[in-house]
Length: 105
Image (cartoon, rainbow, N blue to C red):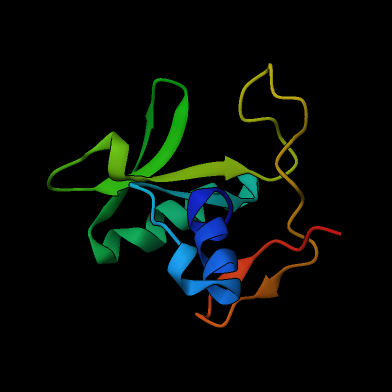
């Protein structure tokens, strides 16, 4: 997990009163896993969509781009103008909520 929700879990572990949620979830994944992920989430009512250049998982019945799970590909830039690519998923750590969060040295 990356982005605002990952920051939420990190801040919550340090100062629970300062933690804030975001509307969407950003999830770093390896591009070769995309088809397997898309198949796996169908059983929980999500479906894969590529909309306006963004890969995401949305509610199959009421798709909403703003509240979807945005898929960011590890080792790739989200936008060509980004300075750095999404970090590789080689060394994750686990937050106390059981979510995988990237480790940044």
